Image 1 (tube, helix red, strand yellow):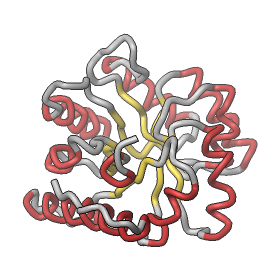
Image 2: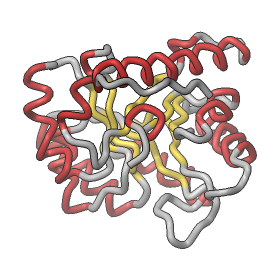
Image 3: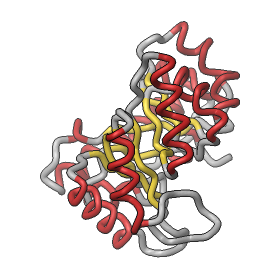
Image 4: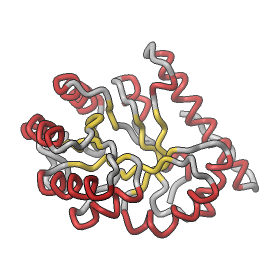
Length: 229
């Protein structure tokens, strides 16, 4: 993976890190016979303030991801005022009581994982007159401590979302930590094909190269762009 030598200038550091990640995406896409523009880089800016985000915006990054609705509400309205073409993705778990706030603020939601949230999102979208594309989050490793729809229930949740006029564009997963992620990414890709879905939100800083080789359309990269927290 590309690593940039730190400089004394945060703007230069951000541009170098972004260039390194984009170079990796281009290289792995080429090896996989995929167009580099088939992969959307979501810069995960959770816990980072505007001062850390602004240099990446200046370097040309336009798609960002946040884990929490409240945190995003605190910092993104001002940032989007100065750069209105930002696309904001919710990549963390979503509570049903925050559905309306999420629909108002985010351009894509990666966290649809249960029928109760589906109902809340459908109601919020209808009220706002705004259809927000969603990924169904899958608990791909069947981990009790993680959110995500159980694998066996994914077809039913996708069908329910379509019936509720929620635009489902793909599946999302976070594989178990410290285990080779490729089998989990391959399984998610197969599940998406079975449901006729093209979007695959999978891969983070440590494994996005593998995810791209296995079909990821969205990679959620934080540390490689912002540095270690």
